[in-house]
Image (cartoon, rainbow, N blue to C red; front, side, top):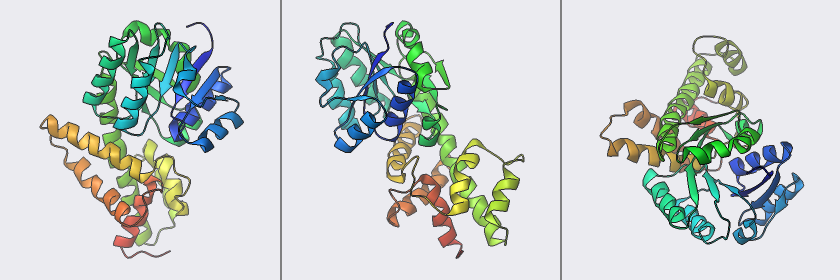
Length: 292
């Protein structure tokens, strides 16, 4: 894997950002997506757009960033039949572990390797290469992909057997879920008490109550603008469902997680599904009778 050719399948918020950073790191990036506008954007960033997955035959490493179980299996079914010998697929999608295991078996039968490598970070962080790769699976294959990881992430961490990456992602997103709603609730509490939202942000980010999520999302809450989504609420709802089912399968109580799910569901009901997840602040503002 010495050459700097890599494929990326799925050029949404995360996939496009990873591809762009790989291009900046002097990789030749072949990108594929079913949406022509995303292919155009990839070419504008300096990548090569390909109209089919079959065009990725010469790639030793392919990154997948996919939104659903069906798209994941559809893509892997095609990758399994590519002629690439020793192909390593780095899957960064957030999906149920049992579905990832099925994908692992699909590629394994074809003599190819699937790594379970979800990433910790928002779309905004992905643009600035501020991602952490939560890697699991074949250790040798993981280590062979070091240059690729360094091309799009701040840190890559090997977590052991296949599936451990997803387990860690669920733990990380549990915290993101709670921290985001806590940030919104605190902002609304302060505003309801008559504090200026910018003053709240500037003060809290320098104190003990700060969190990475507060730093990332509170500026959007201050502005009350959620159109430039780094994570859309409808996509996040998919992640919440996966984590909730995972915790339930382990018979593990998650009272804070469960409580924090409610504002996102309310946001969906209020037509905010394409807004950034920070828009839970707007949901709580309405509940508090706050108008600004």
